[in-house]
Image 1 (tube, rainbow, N blue to C red):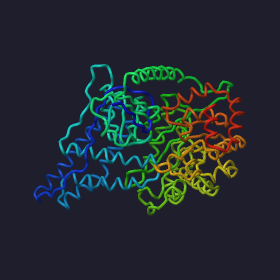
Image 2: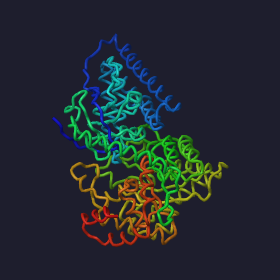
Image 3: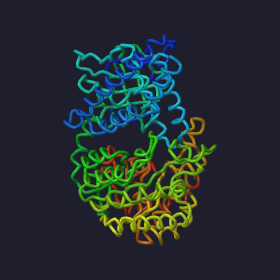
Image 4: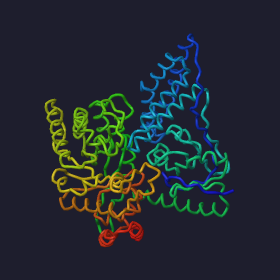
Length: 573
């Protein structure tokens, strides 16, 4: 019987193929007590399994260097290797084996659960999803301990691809399917910043996630259609639906091939308004993909990833190497690096105790100013990297001019420390601020006097303006980028920047949404920053837009009070 299931679209395109169910390694392992004389051999068994997984991951890491796997995978593999080196995981599991005479599988899973609990408390959705890394790396080790080999989908003879159906997929799982005619991925869990999403986008494979219990309603080898644009999975489609999707698939593939022709074209509107299309990245290897689509630079380099899942903060040299790598990769194009955006809810060494409401607590710039030693280290690393290219420093979650002044004082101190060490840096490195809090958007004069650029973080601006936790399923449907209040805050920020003669960019999800491109152009936006995979599609919308015509229409649209009427007006643009 044919039926459809709705999930979250994370990688565009349409896939038609047969289901291949991937078993989810059950981590409800047995717990038993081992004899005292077997404790050492159990410890050896644990370390042998860890060594085997390390060897496998190292092989995958080498594959990224030869181009056999996307560069995005290198970062995830590196993270999994880092977890295996983390004393809070393997060493702590060894202690459980010794003190409680527990079997290795159970000891490892106990430690995993402690780490997962810590990640669950993290407010930032991207970092919170990194708990999946902990689970997946432990699964790999447990599989080795239990002697369970991995399963790859068979190559099909009917010409159709294979649709991988899983509870969740690690990047290493995803790459393991690279040579097996995989057409799409669907999973029970996941989000737009999860591995399945990121790796699927990098491989241009359609994917739908967050389908809840999809593995329990699909049979092996069943015919599936995965609509990665609309977030729909159709199970056992009839011939009429199949034919409709074959046509849509062909049209999409034709459109995608046409988009590649736009790669070398300068983004400009029909009436000659130049637009900058920048890339958002999380890790240094992501810069390669940004350069591959000829992004005008990096509009947002999130540095949180360098600080997470470790007992100590990264030192100055480690950070410097990461920032310099991105700057050198972009070869003269601007790189905007956001300083650490975490809160007291994050499990960082030296952090204050966990807060009840971290979204409104000691996070982002508030946290950095409360940890000046850590912040000075990051600022020195950024300044050192500025010697190698066009680096810009971005301050997150500003709410007052006092925070800007305190940051600039610390920046001057970092410069003085580098001068004392006779280390070169850009004396005039630009400093900008993120507009994510309504208070900042309503008091822009104090910001434009002190800063060289502004960047609107629409994800948090929407969340704080509408008082909606976008990670809370009970209210997520109320999260509305086109709410009149949100649009007015974005518009007045863009206009304030233009009046002060400083550039304003949008680096939230709205910037990468082709449906919002004309709206933002009409507001006066000329700097967009998004995931590299979204750049060509947004560029296409810009090349078709007439900024003069859109400006007049958007002025009328901004006077509307009802969200539904705003949406209708945006669709007409």
